[in-house]
Length: 240
Ligand SMILES: C[S@@+](CC[C@H](N)C(=O)[O-])C[C@H]1O[C@@H](n2cnc3c(N)ncnc32)[C@H](O)[C@@H]1O
Image (cartoon, rainbow, N blue to C red; front, side, top):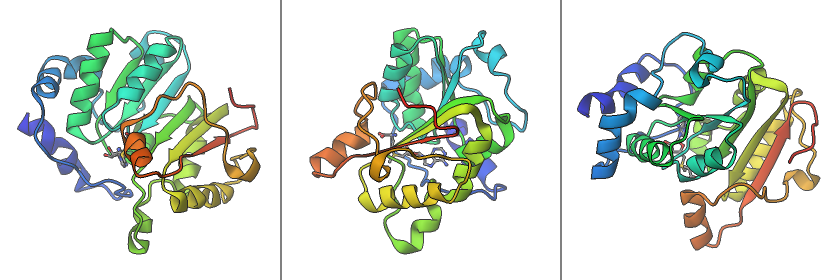
C-alpha cells in the first residue's frame, strides 16, 4: 500500500501543471485497504503518456463522461449506476477515495466506471484525445479562498480551454460549488473562453435532477452555504 501512496507524489515532482490539490493522507479504513488490494488492477488505469482507447477500455462505443476530483466517489458510483449506457472515468488523487470508489464499483457490479489516480491536468493533456469526451463533471472543487492561493484554483480559463479541446462538439461541462466567490470566478473565467457557451440566466443553471448530493455538498449545506450550479456547452445544445 505504501508504494501506491507514493506513486502520485513521485510522478508529480517532474510535473509543471497546476497543483490544485493538497495530497490528503490519513489512515485507510479496512474496507478501503481491502478494495485497493483486491480491485485496483481491475478498475484503475495507470497514468501514462499514451492516449487512451475508450472503446477498448469499456468494450463499447458509449459516450464517455469524465469526473474530476470525485472525493469519496459515492455520487460517481450513483450516477454510473443510474446511466448504464454512459461510460464514466473518475480522476482523483486521494487514495482513500480511490479505495472507497473501488469498493463501490465492485459491490454494485459497475461495468461502466474506471479510475485514474493522478493530477487531472496531466491526465487530460497526456491521455485524452481531442473531441472524444461527452461531458465533464466537477463537483465541489477545492475553493482556495485566500487571494494568494487563487492561482491554484482548478477552474480557470486555461483549464477550461483544455477541457473544451477534449469535448465533442455537443459536449458539456457541469460544475457545482458552495463557495459563492468561486462560483462567480468560474463564470468569469469561462466567459474568457470563446468555445464555451453559458446559456443560463445570471450564469447559474437550475439544479440538475440526476445529480446526487455529494459528501462536500452535505458539509456545505450544514454550514448553510448556497449551492451554485454552472452548465457550460460547446455548441449550445440544451441541457437535460
Ligand atoms: C473538495 S473535494 C470534493 C470531492 C467531491 N467531488 C465531493 O463533492 O464530495 C475536491 C477533490 O478534488 C480533488 N482534486 C483537486 N484537484 C485535483 C486534480 N488536479 N486532479 C485530481 N483530483 C483533484 C481533491 O483531491 C479532492 O478530493
